[in-house]
Image (cartoon, rainbow, N blue to C red; front, top):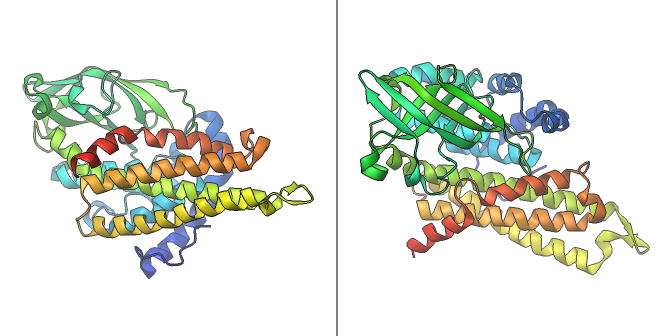
Length: 380
């Protein structure tokens, strides 16, 4: 259980909400983790339960079916979601997809999509990455050609979270290939639109319970009213949303690091070794002490970042630094915790093995650690 002593980012209402979120994940998520790992995705019915429990898109205004709450409630979900190791892509829906609609969507788009995203009837995805374009979004090749009252979309996307289960995709496409980044737009595609196709559910090192897919667009006709925001402003929108996206990843990484640490403490205090317990060995205690100090500092930074973001003051460089620090910390803690489990840590039946596998990608998605360093370096 996450320890809230000394936390500064939350008030009593957040703590009450956390109790609900924690119970929900214990009852509705944990019992299904092994099955989701085997099946490669979380069934849509779970999303409907999340919607009923108020765990989807809490910042969506009440007029669109949401609770109209602050980002702190998203952060509560992020922390408990990662501490529980829930594989469903809730944080993508809550912290990223919903905010694109809130910030840039037309009234019709908000009324059409947001209520169903809040209820769990619609699962969202955002299609940025392509086989030849990852962190460099200016290299996107997918096109959306205007023809009359429609856009015609052609291209391929890959590594798309929620790809197998999504009902709507925010597609990053070039509406004017001659303008580079300024020719980038965001277009909404319903997944029942002719010409849209899902590829395979990708075989990943970790996050086996989270569906990640290839998506294909072949002469996909969508009404021009499906343009999200203004034509040509897509790259600006993507950059503008990055602080919250990277803060979300940082929060989740910190929660997972805490979970790995707690498992290591539990295991070493129970594991017999050399006439005592593994925890009694100085090396074990020193390793754990070093990790505890870093995790303690990590929670302080998370609270600082949440507070700054709530006031609209968290910069792109600060969010990137948080993403860099916490994902690197997550990997360090998970790797050390697995080592302290010894041979047991290499067995998939132990939770630490899953945490270790799942941690590897967080230093890549949302901007690789190397990109984070570049962003931070530019601010110096």
